[in-house]
Image 1 (spheres, rainbow, N blue to C red):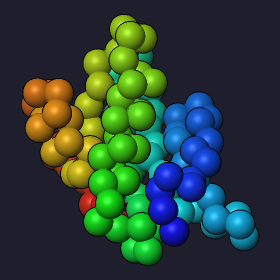
Image 2 (tube, rainbow, N blue to C red; image 1 turned 180 degrees about the horizontal axis):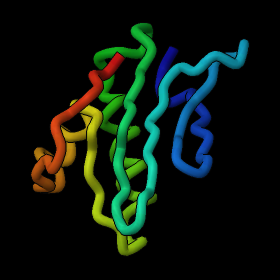
Image 3 (spheres, rainbow, N blue to C red; image 1 turned 60 degrees about the vertical axis):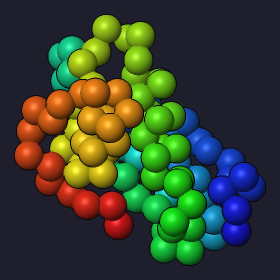
Image 4 (cartoon, rainbow, N blue to C red; image 1 turned 180 degrees about the vertical axis):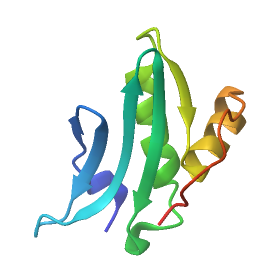
Length: 100
């Protein structure tokens, strides 16, 4: 399956794509507390691994949060590394999850 064929669903605090059976193929989740948005989960099913989909998900989340007067941070280790590499955002908390 190609990520080009995925239909991303944007909901409050998450972006995801589902398989025909309703299971999640990939997702990124965040919470907002005050003026801080925390990306806390990134998941990509192993069948879609190695295609840059996790980075695409974090980029979509960042784009959705950008311009909302929020400080974006991550407790998801993948998202924290992505934010540092791509946006120069230093981690403010110890990462608490890994990409599954």
